[in-house]
Image 1 (cartoon, rainbow, N blue to C red):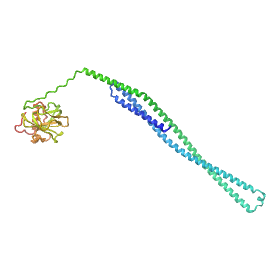
Image 2 (image 1 turned 30 degrees about the vertical axis):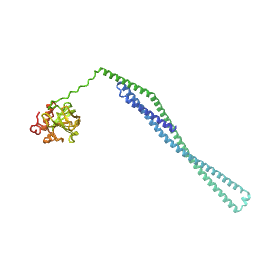
Image 3 (image 1 turned 180 degrees about the vertical axis):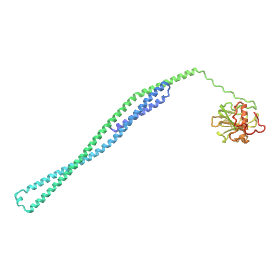
Image 4 (image 1 turned 30 degrees about the horizontal axis):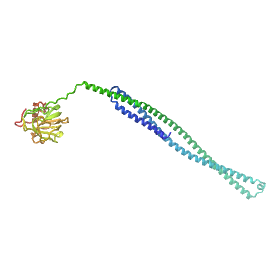
Length: 412
């Protein structure tokens, strides 16, 4: 099996996983349908999840077999190199053995011929001492050569036997490795067969699953549209609420500036009166805007306007903290003018009497009545004014309030 086949198996598993992931995403988008449709789609998603896990497991197993195949292939290459080297040494040993055998035979023949040539009576009986000594020397040399040849032959035979043993061991190891490789290939082929079967099964059911989910989604959408249409037909035409007419104060009169605040809740009386809620806050009466911002107040808003009519003519009112201003400095206002939009911030709003400097100072601070958490005489007086106009009064923190009002200050 080639690497191309192995990696094709891996890509096969990856394609199946990707296809199932896409299906899972599609089914996830459809799973928001109500009732039986959603339950059926959740069941389909569970099946897809099982198939994803199965494909992932098979893919991991094929990957493991690919790694094992690479290792065995490397071992095979090393074994083949060793076998080639061993075979070359074996050929050399056989040549050496053959050469030693030839030399041994030649020496034996030479010794025999030399000895046989001297068997005549003359040589044996009448040879001189010198001739006998030469003959002994020659035969001794021949014997040494034979001994050396025999020794070389024995060494070659031992080396040949050892080499053949190594070769047999390598051959046995190669055979074992080949058997392992065959088993691994069979396992890989079985895994790929399983993957192909799963892919075939998923391919056959994929279209059916998506088609069924789409049909359920379309049916649910049609049912929702029909229900919405029926409900719309059964419901009487909606009538837009008519906003209440703005309160018109008589000339020189004042109106409740908090009349349109939603969830209005009075809080403590301090320099002025604190409230929470949201909505438009109006001017208390006719007046002129002196300031709209001051960084020293929470939220940075400090809308101050000087009243130009009524019992508090000339006095300055402030509305501060969690308000988005809707007026400009120098703008003339009336009880119908929205000063700004109160929003549900962390501080709420505070409204009361300010001094005329337009610097963000209150009358309570100007007269030294406020120490950080107490109810002041100016705050208590403004709470009474709001109550007289229909707004809820603030919550006193101490009785009587701290400080006194200047002579001639209006009472409510």
